[in-house]
Length: 399
Ligand SMILES: Nc1ncnc2c1ncn2[C@@H]1O[C@H](COP(=O)(O)OP(=O)(O)O)[C@@H](O)[C@H]1O
Ligand SMILES: [Mg+2]
Image (cartoon, rainbow, N blue to C red; front, side):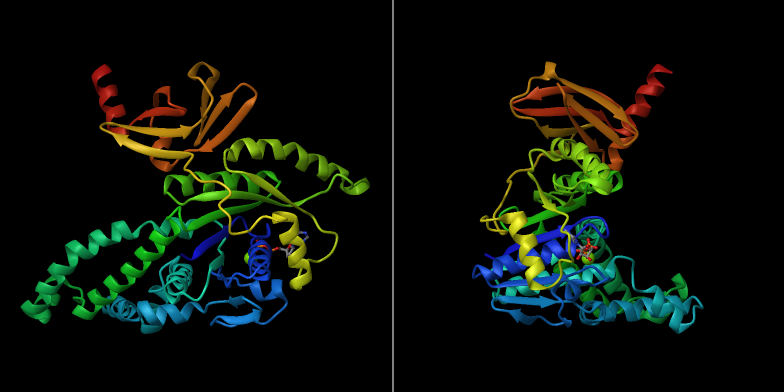
């Protein structure tokens, strides 16, 4: 089975360097490895100090690298749909060039790049696929949408097909928009199937690990927490958090203050992401590009460990809907209910056990829902939220 590692994190934290370093270390140890960037702002070639192309190229023994071209997959999967949308927009009086611009949906370009993962898995050519992904993990959220889009295809497509047979010109005059032709539905289904496959691959805990890279600074930590919560809620397995550019203890003088700030953040970060392990990479005193620099990063991060190991298995959070309430489950082994206290502020839920605190960003659906109770059950803290509808009903009953 092909192992898949996907690195994400805020811009500039070191995703590309760490993805490249992981891939190189793995290739050095004899695994057939491909590393590709799905971030639209490619810089993988810069990290290796090599020019990369849109197709995989062997750049070292056992190592292939690729900077996919967004238009390739748009051409392959999106063209027919795009042609229809262009029709649709120009029907509405938009000029053709504008219409074409409008049809590249936001997120579509990175999603298109992620489709390569499915190709590489199917090719059977690689033991390991390393993805240098875009900053926010927003695309991973988009990727969990095919379940919703499938609804569209299942419900609307049959109607569309019937309509096409009835006589398009009549219907088009009636409803005022062009009716998509069969091939548009076929293309949409093909695209959704591929996206579905990529989603299933990345959500498979036996195959994939999503890794967060962050800097020990407020904004990067806040963003990483948010992504982390979403990965777990959407079921993307996450096995490692990496703090990059950590000032070593030996740093003194001008940077001593920054070193102390970072050291103060580190235990909080470990608590926030527990039980997923947190590793650190030092801030190197020289540029870490090219194979030599990347090997140093790889060594610092993994030492003798295999970058393709599973450093954590499990799902620390999940949400269940039980009738009129949502239950957020948090794994907290070795803890009793009496030891746990909860506090909510905005979209954050702070769970404290003694001096240990974990800040969890609540998903949108729960932000407006009042917490109605919490209990400990077999090492799992279950926090109950009433759904908005019930909250309103209660208000009405009491008001
Ligand atoms: N641990 C490190 N020490 C020193 N420089 C680093 C380290 N990690 C990354 N860099 C440098 O920081 C810059 C940004 O890193 P990069 O991997 O491109 O970040 P991202 O992909 O998250 O935007 C690059 O110039 C890279 O060489
Ligand atoms: Mg990058």
